Picture 1 (tube, rainbow over the protein chains, first blue to last red):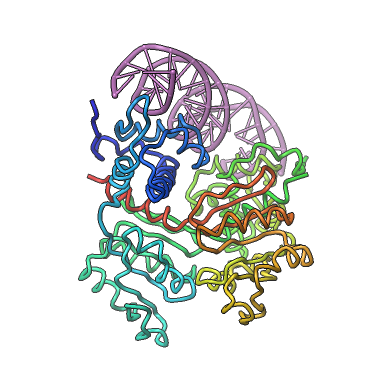
Picture 2 (picture 1 turned 30 degrees about the vertical axis):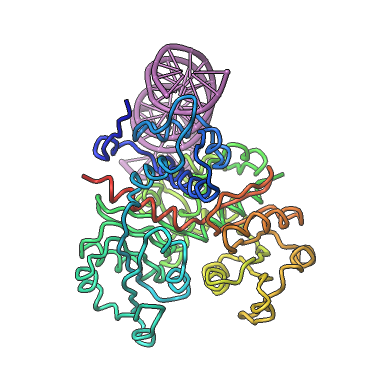
Length: 217
Length: 217
DNA sequence: GGATGTGAATGTCTTCACAGCT
DNA sequence: AGCTGTGAAGACATTCACATCC
């Protein structure tokens, strides 16, 4: 019998790597769907996703059983299920703090819109930038942060300010009730329990590469 | 007796998480140095870096023993050591493929220059963009990729092209002898053994956040 | 027959705890 | 006395291998 465990049951022990892999399976499923493929095996997901079929099945098993033995998974069905698991069945209200170069790249990043992430407000502390129009957004002064986050019921904040300003922004955003933050500043941020934080740290990634290059022969 | 193991001995079993933490220790050491702090304990590195003191000591132990018992680590000394481990004692020649919004943010990203990453060439396939001047760089047509990578002895390539163009770029770059790639395209790339690859996947990070938000209560 | 779902086995990473220097 | 460096223990994640079901 096919039973989908609720998030409550499944929560608690899902590792970050499992979540990352779910994202990647989802992407592969979108591609498969675009190709008109109807069914997919754990083996195919594994090969395209750079993992093993056992890993795919184990990852999925934390949330339910979505396949048919002997057949594999229905592409549209599994796609829907993973979207559900990742919370992508709905749109998310996002704000961007920091209207620099990185912020500028993010606001017009098509892949965000495609996945239901709507940037509904942009803030900057620079008087020169406030009032500028970016696509459908007018850059707001950072004093309005709390008010606008609340009024627009923002759920996720993207921090794209310089490192030395990031922690202050995060403190304010957390106090305003936001529980998810994507940080582009190259600093380790402190957030209370219950606030989800992910970091995009390009310097760290580059250093991973130089380490690899340096430690060969 | 203080013995620094060579990269050769240490190579082989260093995990990605260890390398990431080394990056973060390095950053903390730079901050400590800027404050004029002379010595630091594994406990302080741990607290600021969001880990444990045992983890810090274990990470460092893979490469040598850099501390003094009873005292801690000399800030400038440990800083130098970690820079050495990560290969940051020298400059690295970098090229950027893809002159879109993300590329534009990267080329003026101060934190890259600061760490010795010099973007020495920029490519795009769009005729409109070729010839434009970005800072000190003129955007080159992608036909010149192989020639320019070789002539400038580029060591690291940053891929910032749309997903469906990324694999082709990577294949060419790898054939041209580059052994380290930082990928911003939202696809899983195939590279042969011996080529280091890191991915910056903003959509995946966002999905990590929506998963966390959705699986609470 | 063929591919899933899953306990058990294995492998990897983290934490403990303490001997050993300074 | 204080803090490092490190084997040993423990926690966690991946892989194996097979019973189960379409």
